Amino acid sequence: MSRVTNDIENVSNTLNTSFIQICSSVLTLIGTVTVMLWLSPLLTAVTMLIIPAMYFGMKWITKRTSVRFKAQQRQLGQMNGYIEETLSGQRIIKAFSQEERVMAKMKERNDSLRSAGFWAQVYSGFIPKLMNFLNNASFALIAGIGGLLALQGVVTIGTIVIFVEFSRQFTRPLNDLANQWNTLLSALAGAERVFDVIDEKNESEDEKDAVDVEDTQGRVEFADVTFSYEQDEGETVRNISFTASPGQTIAFVGPTGAGKTTMINLLTRFYDVDSGSILLDGQPIQQIRRESLRSHLACVLQDTFLFAGTLRENIRYGRLNATDEEVEEAAKKANAHSFITALPNGYDTVLTSDGSGISQGQKQLLAISRAILADPKILILDEATSNIDTVTEVKIQEALGRLMEGRTSFVIAHRLNTIRKADRIVVLQEGQVTEIGNHDELLVRNGFYASLHKSAVEGLPLIEKAHG
Ligand code: ADP
Image (cartoon, rainbow, N blue to C red):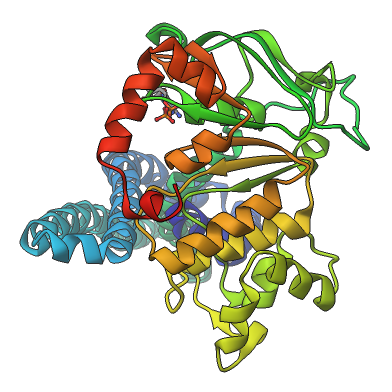
């Protein structure tokens, strides 16, 4: 964000003001030197004597400022990032009484920024002083040497007077250039950071022969899929094979870090498989354009993201061209209609982007409304682990039941109820499928799932007792 705001603004300001000034300085310089040469090449040469001094002086200064300007931009970015992070995480910070530590760290970052900025300014502050000195030195040189030449009758007093004036004309644009150099350096430091972002590799392009898929039955097959996030860190998931027939519910079960989310990341093509393939209706998903593939998918994730806007707009995010009636229809199916209409402004209630004002459970109902509106063939569900009140929970389960009907669903399941109802349970352990089958089959197997089930039944959450 800092790169987008601070650095781009920096570059844009430089282009807007400094660039124009630099052009005008260069033009003035060319004009002045031409006239000076025409008046007296000898005195022009004398005036030029200051250029090497200026060159070395500037070199000395910029060598020191450029690193510091870069550091300043970097520190500014870090500090802004830190402010953003701590502001959005302030509840956690307070809950864990970390205020002092956060403030100390903020002070530390602030100090680094100040010291980088301080030295960048100190060194660049030398520039006008240097120029002033050279200006006066050039005046003295012209007056002295010009005086001697005038005594010998080589130049007239008039020429010297004009020359003194022109030598100021000559150094002023140089002076401006030197000052602009300063801004330019800071902008260059910013531009470098902006280009880092621009040069960042894209999500890989769609394959050249990738096609659009208009309609799908929703048959998904994982065929010997192996994948790792980092090439040198071993495989995250390996040799995964199973098939989801149209309309089936597949539950992924396994300990944290087993690779459940990874399976979803591969199916949605946020990452591509290293070997093996994932097939949609028998066609490898790499051959399908990402946009087309994703149009057949909808996700209901643990943490529903709501945009700043009305409830209606937030539901409509599922399908942008939906009419108001369709939005309400979807909300009804998702059991969200009643809580929405109970709000004073109903569907026009404005949400802040962090979704404060509505509960976690209600957020989920909104997410389900979105998915119902999107009406995809394939559904991805990351079941919430957080506790939601029993009434809302029942509503969510009911809405999900309706949503999953007739769709191929992949569920990262935590609730026993959901798992029990799944057509197939894929048990993942350390990136491998260790057991596969439905609830009854896996219980008979008496393996990992059976023991998981046993411990879950013993510590059965309230909701399970009510409906189990
Ligand atoms: P689960 O959803 O079953 O808890 P994940 O699929 O999220 O597990 O993670 C499987 C493994 O992959 C974990 O060891 C995790 O640390 C690693 N992992 C997950 N996401 C990334 C990522 N973006 N980059 C590198 N490693 C990751």
